[in-house]
Amino acid sequence: MPMRGQAEAKEELQRLMKEKGGLESELTSLKQQLQKMGVGINDPLVDSGGFPRADVDVHGILAIRNKLIKMQNDHVVLMKQIESSMLEYHRLLKQAGPSSTDKKPNTVKVKQDMKTRETLKAKVLEVHQKILKENPSIGKAQALKMAIQAVHSKNGQASRSLPANQGQHAQRRMTDNEGQTGDKESLQSLKPFLIVDKVWEDSPSQRAGLRSQDKIIKFGSIFSSNLKPTSLKDLVSHSVGSPVEVIVRRKGDVKRLLLTPMRWSGSGLLGCFLKPL
Image (cartoon, rainbow, N blue to C red):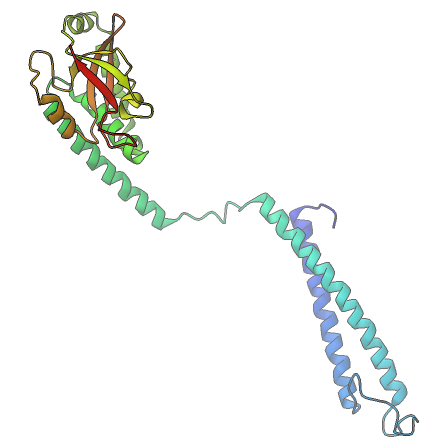
């Protein structure tokens, strides 16, 4: 069948179906006429001696049978045309895609999405409070950004659960703080207490941007001044799934990173080897 528009294909299919209905109605009528004449489609019209039967209208029956056979052949051809037309029509429907009237909102999915967003909001606020508690030196906006990133890494959509202005405000605050000369100078004056000896591939440390030979001057709430033998281990074990701000000195520059301790394919929660300085 040649390529045609969807409307034309539909009209053609309707025309063929109407023709099929008329043909089948006429076939039924012819069969009923034969029954009234006392014979079926295949009943013999000669007697045992080979002579035409005298009890039926042989010529009338033959005429109806011939017409019936012709119409049955026409019906076979018509059904093939209908099949071809139907395939073409559905191909055009699929090609065009669902119409705007067919696109009804999935109320169940909408409710599920709303519930998911509310759950993510609550999770972000929970992580936000935890970060502020464990890192009192971090501002609220920066802690909010860290919380959004932490939940986002787990759910893939947490950033959409908060108002856009909150996330943007947090990001601006963090960028502005990094750009202040006084802040950089104060960070440069801090004494490094750890050096990154090795970072494993696809580890939390690598994803956070930590590199070999980075010198750590701040790890969460830990500085060289308050470092204790077990403080780093305790902080990491209590921060699984929550981002920790790590500030490093790299080739004379200061970098702020967000490292989220978590279980991964390798050993440990960080995926790096740290040496004390």
